[in-house]
Image 1 (cartoon, rainbow, N blue to C red):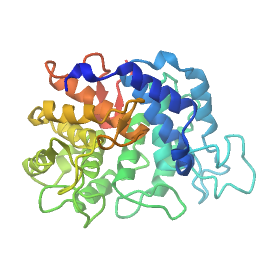
Image 2: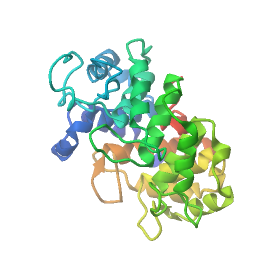
Image 3: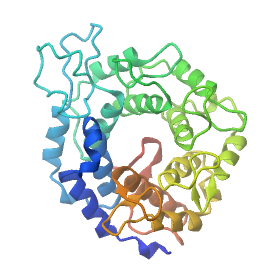
Image 4: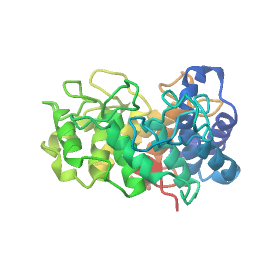
Length: 337
């Protein structure tokens, strides 16, 4: 299945549909609506189809998600962006729901990426409060919680914190030494990196760790032989990329594993033709990409499939798909210009 098998218009329509109205399968993810919008907007950006959305309307919606802090020095989280208007609005300052109307680190990352990609000058972003939020969410282990209400803490949020600091050009809210220490504690004997200390190596965790180190300028702090990590990533190729040992290939891991190899400057070792055939075979007849062939599409797998196809098109002009916007891999978004 060659590069000409990608129906770009079909996928553009898929993202546009989901940006306007999500199907019932997304009901449980309503609290993460800004993350779902992140996938749709950046999918359109890769396809060079952002001119088909009303950027001003989306930008104003994102700013409605910004959490206002009554007192930046209090124990309340304050600052950042909430995942959905279901929790509250930007003008809901002074009520007694502030404890539960909290921002979270993934939504803040997604919101800042959307504003950046849509060309907003971010003059209305409360940067000081966001930086303070990051400081409150970092633990003594170096890891970050997603939010202040007893949430998960793992490598995903380490990446988000570093990406936020990079986009704001302010690292004062993060202890970089603790971040590096945490990442090194997540290393495994086989060269892989887990999502938390003592966990199995996983492609998404590897990507988040390498991207966090790259964003923070601490790549040399990874305390392992790079060749072992590269070998582990390369051995995840089984027609498509699998996320962990002995798992079925999954379209999104083309990006997680391929993106990690891209940042490590070893994407040339990827069997691009084989991986591309698998990813293209995951296209759905209604648009979008599925996790596996002959299953249902979703916006997350659709976005990361296109993101890897963009990386592959840059790595191999002969095999790659023409016309996809190049990726800023470390941020997981296409370059804005």
